[in-house]
Length: 293
Image (cartoon, rainbow, N blue to C red; front, side):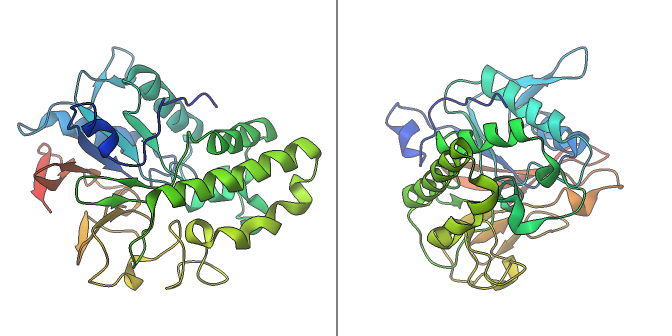
């Protein structure tokens, strides 16, 4: 894995200190469906309101456009679809072409399965069947702060599944780093397969399942289900819980729409937050549409 996005700031404040106010383009739950991800990302450039986030070359590959965005992949890039490595390669290419700090990749529950495959043992999915070298590289990327958990935007906080109560973004990212560093030590010492699950109880803010199969009301930032999200929860953009279109529940916006739109024309979407508001850009057969959220 060759994903090096440069600095991984915890908040938009890092950019503000440099006199920058980039819009945040967020997409989640790609799940190895490369064409759906392409449809969502290229839709941004089809609107009058927003310049392109990517361009397409003669061979059909996506590249970072000349823009003022932060692109945030909000977890679950992997599994289910059949283009997992190609989705990783797309993210690697965009991170290599974008200015430092402008491409982020957050852990989701399926990235958690890369770190802790013995906790899930899902049959036939990429995160579980990943080869050892790529898995080790993935764990090392988390340990090196290249794959964090959360980000504080202008008004909204971003994580894969969210939380009912305010949480410290820096502390959440530190939990993921610390857990991965312990896993790296286990890998180095040959203890990973036997002891990877021993450390999970120490990191409930991030990895807590909220029940044997996940998604319970006490789940952590990778597992909370939208149905348990209170109307008064802090403003957040999350994925994880499948929707037909970007959906607001109280202060929380869920952007997990790709799987519910597979097999039909259009429906793939991104969420874009600017200093003055938040909207969704959705691909449709008649052209991209913008919906204020």
